[in-house]
Length: 68
Image (cartoon, one colour):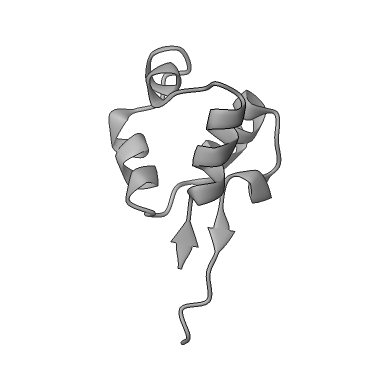
């Protein structure tokens, strides 16, 4: 299972809001909704988040073993 919990912590640490992502960095509200619902995103979106937040992928997403 995908979790974006690290993203929300990283954003808080760097004082970046979803409003900033949408209106300053041109993220679509649909992408933000996908992140909030732990849905998959593209690698381009992941790269863009890494550049904006000056971090690596492990500061944005984690994979949780769902026991399968």
